[in-house]
Length: 398
Length: 223
Picture 1 (spheres, rainbow over the protein chains, first blue to last red):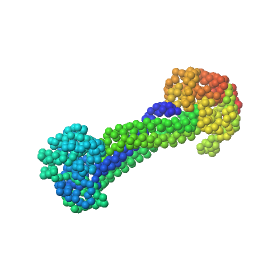
Picture 2 (cartoon, rainbow over the protein chains, first blue to last red):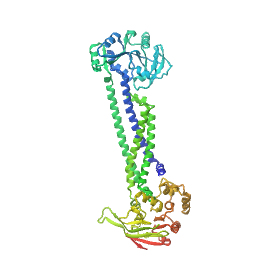
Picture 3 (cartoon, each protein chain N blue to C red):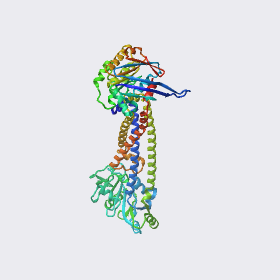
């Protein structure tokens, strides 16, 4: 009967091809949609972790045209500075727990990148936001002119990159984060200060009168025990002039909202495709059984039981749906994995593919679900076939 | 094998009309014995095919019972009755009944495949030669004429050497020469021990019959 099912499918190539394509479409939609939603969720988690601090404080001018948010959230390039005294005033506020400065610089061109690169300097002694990411791939200390490149940058460990005439060595590459980290270069405080000085000397820095030794770009702060981030943000914004404090959660709430909207749209699309697919499969199997009613009656004449007839219909459905589902899953993976960067750019949202185990799980679930849907659609026809009155059908043909 | 029908009837409900219930087969007794070829004749719509379907386990009688060597056919569960039909009965239905996705040889051997039994290819070859379709072994049903398809159906029904053979208009699409060959062949099957029932309009069939019956408006009469 198994070989009969195979031969029946080969004997009707157009019908089989349509069913296979439909099953492939169902799996592709389920896999692609679910993987996209999961990647967006993971991207948001990664973004939250990437911010890594309860509160961020930047000079007031950095808030113009969302400059700071664009750097942190969208991967835009830019830089701004505030005097160390203002930074000190912030650090002295009550409720400030862990605190670490960061230093920003944007390259205007580098051999490593086709796009301008954001350079962020950290203080390894106090940093608690970037170092945990760096430690995932690089366990050593960052020396002078050592840099860590984001995963999307065209630079490899050991490469020499020049920024404002200063040659830097790529000490490590970050693993993919799905955030602006992927197009950023990290270095320590001494190196960034040397780069800022060089950019100033070459007249390539908009902040001509800035003193690299007495400035920071932003402060990353964790609220002390007993103080909420909201209280700390309000306190800093009220009492320290010319700075702006942000709560991390507020910064990503817009992105979370967009992500939720995109996820909802994807889920609706999946549901629509599946309902449509189920209806088409139901019709296709029903039509196929009606068209072959006499053939089933003949099998019955030869001694096929009702169960065998139903089994034949189900086997044909399972074979087509399994073939289509595996094809759909393969296409889905071939589209989503190599082109996840394009998807990220198109959606404009943090996008981080789940790990291999999760992808395999989602893939298996999509295939199983498609096959079960095909089987459920065929079950109605299988039941009808198992109820046929052979005598009446053959009599009707006379 | 002895196939015995006792007081069987078959009632149908016709949609619409004043008298929508009618008996296609009125109370009938019939015995098909091994080694005997029985010819059943009668006008169209007289109930011949309905009787054949009931006897072959395909259509449950409204009343009465059918036994094969004492076993009540319709008391068997469907699975058992189906297997019984597969092994012990060969049915040649009316019309074109080839499975279109299979070639001629595969169609003829299909009764073995239904239960995963080892196909008797020698028997299939012998039947194809006897029925003059050996050259069509690899052909698809779509490439065959009506007469060739009938012969494929005959070979398929006989391939398992059934003990009871039901043939419903087996020579419908055949020329005189092939008609004679098929009746001769069915007669040989009877001689070899099968119980054969042939439903036909062909008067020539009478020449091969051990018993001739007639159906007249649902009533079985001796020919």
